Length: 223
Length: 89
Length: 229
Image (tube, rainbow over the protein chains, first blue to last red):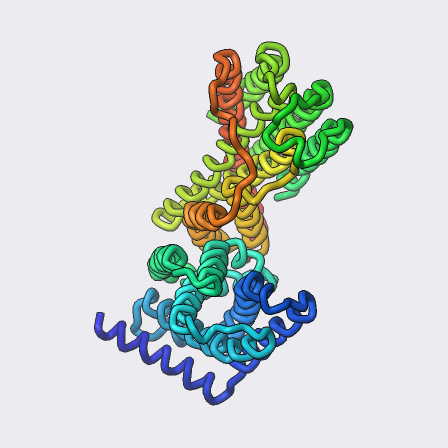
């Protein structure tokens, strides 16, 4: 068990190291999130009051899109160099490989979100300073849920003939609870309320799907 | 091999379309009033019973045709398998 | 044994046809016309049983997916996929009949009510399930779609919870006097009859499709064998 844990940690470290050297996924994800925020600003031209109403939804549209890009990317690197086979040969429990992969996705997505937030504040004149810790907590829980489902489904869709194209088609309906709870939680923060309901729902979602992903990942990657 | 299943989808699609078309005409034919008037079902709303019956009948017919197609395909396959097994011997 | 099975299937088909016609007769002749809603209420006898069958079908898909992963038996995968396809069909019927009823009664086609929204999300999940299925390579299809089937169904309660909780933050359209309140006994009878007919219909479709699936597998195996030597 400790060996599994160490193995998972080294997989995570490997993914982060590669990313820090190449910066491919992070750059693409962050730019895409920023562009989405920008395009939605053109589309709605919100006033300061309107930002409170549509801002949370807008942020999460950007996060979900850029997260999808990240999921597709982490998988394509593993496939290109036959990395997945090598990974499966490692004496690490398959469930732990899943957790490591999900953790890597969570780290990248969170990084892209953290970069996007200041731009959101500037472009939309939004005031988030007063509830920043809570906002980050809601974001993190939402990101965990998104990646828990996304990591597993991206491995499934990568094996279809259409490759990544099908990922959003199956991922978006599945993350409806994450999306709703994260948006509603962020809206509550903008209104000055506590997002306790959202946090509870997100926590349940995260635990359920991390557990199911842990149990089923072995079936998804078996050769 | 899967041709049978795919062909059997045709009646399903037909039934769904018929349902949508018939039912939309059934409702659209009447002045259902503005959203405010209709909200709590405050007043009796006329609806064309024969249109409704037609829609339901279409769906039933489509589904039954689908079943019959499946059944027929099954019998054909069975005969084919029988012939193949005959040749084996 | 084969002949017996075909005979049972034929009998089921004829019986089902008769029951379906009887159901229509009961709905339009026997059941009384609802006082406030008028004849449009008769959609209820189609709408609610379809919803029941859709949920049942998705639940069966979930169960069959789990048992497939445990046993790796082809027939379980066949049950899962057939049930998902039939569930999709009935889910579509629910989503089409709902607005048709809602427009004259509520005055609006659609409302973001938890039940409506969850059904729509469910529909999308199983469309994706069937789509992914059709694009997976044959050898991996059963296992991978079983995992998707499990993920999809576990989402159902969470989707419902999240939407209900999200909606209660906003004023809801008036849904008072819902379907279940104070049904006439004749209406109740017709409703349960309809429920029975729909469930039987579901069973027969899945039964025939599973049988067809196993026959197809056998036929393609036989064809392979012939090609090999």
